[in-house]
Length: 257
Image (cartoon, rainbow, N blue to C red; front, side, top):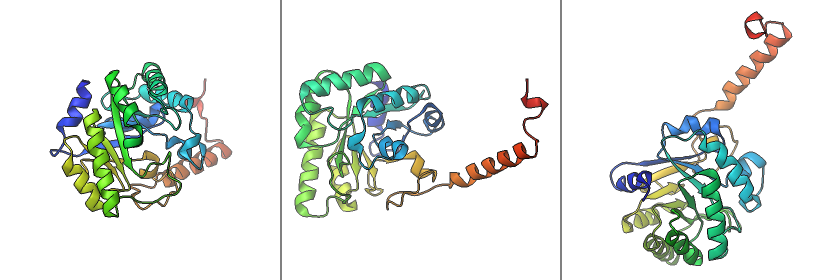
């Protein structure tokens, strides 16, 4: 097992696991110092390409951005989302995951779902491909944004799926938009870590889209906390650049050849 994955597993019930998204070398270099996991999420579809669904994200999209991220990741575990329609069967899952790992040199891949894709997950793990699970709200298959784990039936199914994923050999599970009490039950039921997003402080770790965290996106999703408004500082820099060029203060001799 990858040493970085072993370190993630050791954090269960001991210290919070930090996970953020990156889609380029520049962002990867910045977050790598602070996180345990750098995730190249298929959220890049909405963040970078203004897609209305992650279903439009291609394998080539994921690989190209992951190659860039790899240049900036030195310390953290690098995980790549397998996009929609790339793991419909054991063979397609293996072929595509193998390509992702070979071309991006990532440490693991992430697949959305429980019982429906358990055969593919088992097959990948049998083939020595590390897998991170994802339960709760599944953007690749959800028809609308809706939190999960509110009913007794849903709660039981989520716990069942989580235990099934654990048995298959995944090293961690992302729990998205799951009711706090249900997220707590899932986390307590597992020996492997849960990484929450919109699923309360009860998870073993937290993940956010970095562009949301810094206020680069104008998203108003409930679970997003903007820790800074980076747009404000970008505007200050752009205004100063514009002013300096118009007043012929830039470029000076110092900035010229």
